[in-house]
Length: 226
Image (cartoon, rainbow, N blue to C red; front, side, top):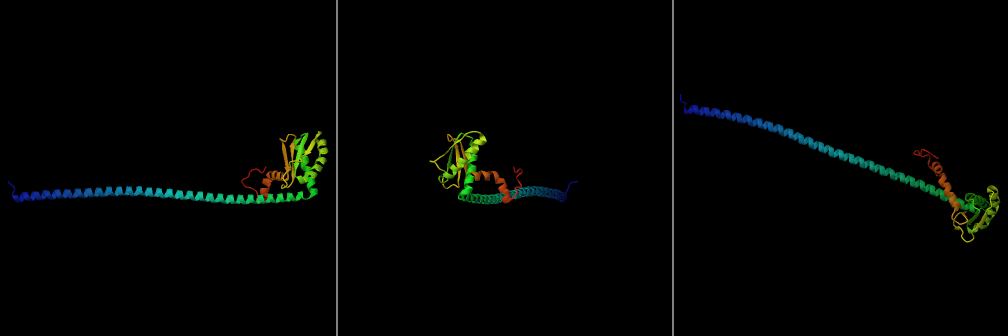
């Protein structure tokens, strides 16, 4: 039985509807999949950027923390240096005051002559030479000669050896020093410096730990005091 034009048109219309329905469903499926892939990619990009941003600010935070530590360390070092400088200034003032007191001793003939006797005898013992030369301030020549005369017998008795002592009358110690003497061996290559400044410096070096402890208290970082 042959189909009429109406039947053909109806079948064509039905087929077109079916095709359109399938196309519509396919479009919806593609849209849904595209939306899903878009959301997944967007989530991935957002997470990637979030990680980058968090890493960036974490790095910045570490840099800031490091800068704070460096700044704090610098400030502490500056403060420590100020304290050390203040302490050194105090010790310098103390030593200057001691020098002034030494200069006062030299103005007292009785005390100064006794001091010279000890310095001269000490110089003899330190050199242990048969011939020595002594240099002193020009204004001290008489006192030093008296000290030499007194100590020669003491030295001879102690070491059982003779000693010839010369006081240098051409080269004197500077008159600005507090006092004391320098003792040389016969060829002048060995010197014992027994000036008051030198004795003060040696004493200060030996007693510096005790001086610092008396002035500033015990150092918690020092394990040994000897």
